Amino acid sequence: MGGMAGRGNTGGRGGRGAKDTVAEVRRPEVRLPPLVAYDGEGLEADGDYDGVCFEETDLADASGPGARFMDCELRGCALDRTELVRARFIDSVLTGVRGVGTDLAGASLRDVEVVDARLGGVQLHGAVLERVLIRGGKIDYLNLRKARLKDVVFEGCVLSEPDFGDAQLVRVEFRDCVLKRADFSAVRMESVDLRTVAELDIARGVERLAGAVISPSQLMELAPAFAAQIGVRVEA
Image (tube, rainbow, N blue to C red):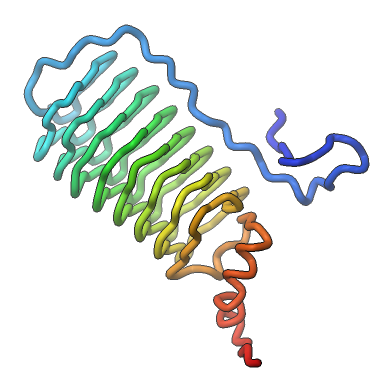
């Protein structure tokens, strides 16, 4: 079903071989219907929010474990310490959300766009992300341990000390973004594109990059780490 698309492939017999192609990420296509403004307070456990717009809503310290957000928009909302464990976001957009300590452990995000977020200490361990675009903004200490990411794009954002430990990444692209002190310990990768990362700083797990594609310049930058991993000493 057209799952392999080679960037720069001429398409002819003289083009690159199949080994040089990268599986194309399927991006979300979110088309929100007319929305109803949210006029409540806080969130409800297992709440069902369908076609709702949360505009500049203060959801700090709100608790909505197991809540479902379908065709929703969260714009400029405060998410400090918001508890959204096992929440589900489907066909939704989060724009300009901000906060520290947002708990989305075990959450499910499908066909979701996160734009210009300013977040710190977001808990997404054990979460499932499918067809998700994270564009712009800055996220510090993103915890994605044991999460499953499929068709996810990080675009033009800054990820400071993200933790992908023991996560599974399938068709994930890091485009024009910054990765600072990333932890890839025990990660499993398949068709992960790192070639356009503006700053690639891997703190742990450089040996787990099998299944990723990097650029020649990135290879040179990572060469000392690769050499150290296999016990090669480099001396002039």
